Image 1 (cartoon, rainbow, N blue to C red):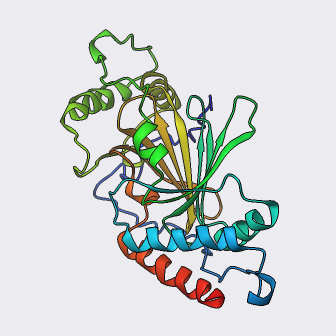
Image 2: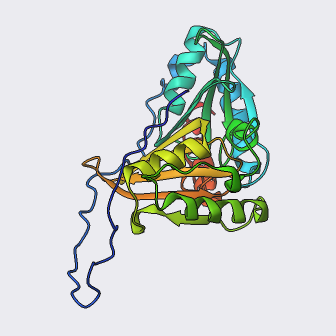
Length: 285
């Protein structure tokens, strides 16, 4: 992936020009949300040929029951399944709210299933063909947590930057990022810079993107509206953008964290997924 589209928001954000003349503006709330629907799977009398798929589904259930957020991902291989068993796994998993595209050098497509914390991870070759097909149980896929910043820059040298004449507000933001990055450790509270509340121009944003560089991972989380999470080429730094259901950018932030929390499944979600999968598999007991 060579491109990250950064919607531009210019002006003074939400701060009134005259503090004594406050006009309250209510943000339009997004409409619609995704809800869980029971996967449509074959009836028990039609499942005699699905022993391999059911074996992997039961291994998935065991992994869900044992997993806790922050643990390494539990991986279940789907390579070797015949077409009917693979279709069964497709039906069982469905598509959830979070999708991930990992560009070079990671090269993978990731889709959360309808079971939160269960991810379909397909690894691609240089021609875009699937070379490995897996299911992972994790709060966030292992490839994202462990490999996103493998080739990233680890620090920002703001002292050597050449600032264009039409860039005004990006330099102090870069100085803040350069100051906070060395302090961050996995598990720390994220440090968030809310660009929506700060004055900036299109040139400021383009300069920020150029200095921070473009990373290989883009995460799209769909719920109330969309959240687009783009990795940068700077270690532990993400560009997080929230859109309402009309695709209007409503919040634009930079976040220093290992993975933004909005992209991660919580323990209670994973436990709920285990209960739902157990209910489904009870049909085949």
